[in-house]
Length: 312
Ligand code: ADP
Image (spheres, rainbow, N blue to C red):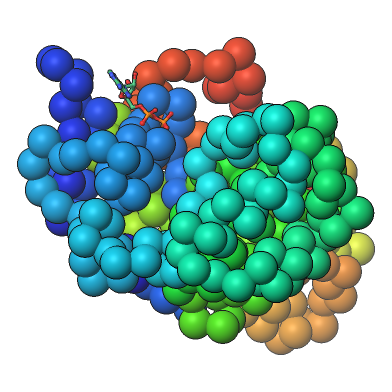
């Protein structure tokens, strides 16, 4: 469990984290979202005792990080995959960490196996690709078999297979009852991996909720419909008579707003009209996130503000 209470960090006149209160619970994967400069890294650094709060508090596994007796065995963290001594081999890097916590050398082999780095164990860290360096960072985070994992952009540099691998790994670590907290810029990936989301903008909390609830609450109240019944046929008149608005899209589908999927299906059945598709329209995490954080963006990238077409 990670708990922040009114957590605040100011650098001079700049408030990086602003009275932030949220709880990251065990047994789930929680995604941490926010535009560049929102305060995610600062929050993670405060959780890990790498910086001290200006006000408020943060605990991990029930205590302040600096009060943990064997931090590696309680909290595993990956903040910067390149922050390793490049001249050391992969195995020696992990052995050094293991020794600092009196962990047996065989644990190093175990984590090398978990992350799939056995074949490069004797290579120097500086020779690793970014994807392999990420795997090494994850191995180090897992070394002490901790109950809490904090990962900043863990999929950075991983290929498609690597991304799928980490998704499965994080879900299984959460299923074992661990707390998994990760940030990622790849929204489509986070949507698949995380069960919960914490969203911040300009250091403030914007949302702290379940992923499915978050998407449902911010999706339009619309249904996508396909029917062989013509544009000016009975189905359209029926829907409009029941108060719905019907918009045709370029691909021959209808976007029906103002009636539930069930109400549309029942109306079609009552009148014996065939339907070829009936789907509730959901926004993607990325669409919701972009709309929500638009005003909280500190540094706007060139891809921001793209108008995405919701209808298929
Ligand atoms: P994110 O990880 O969401 O991109 P950060 O936590 O890195 O955001 O930064 C939040 C804000 O705090 C930014 O405006 C950043 O410039 C500022 N900031 C972060 N660290 C420092 C620091 N050591 N000194 C001054 N300002 C900082």
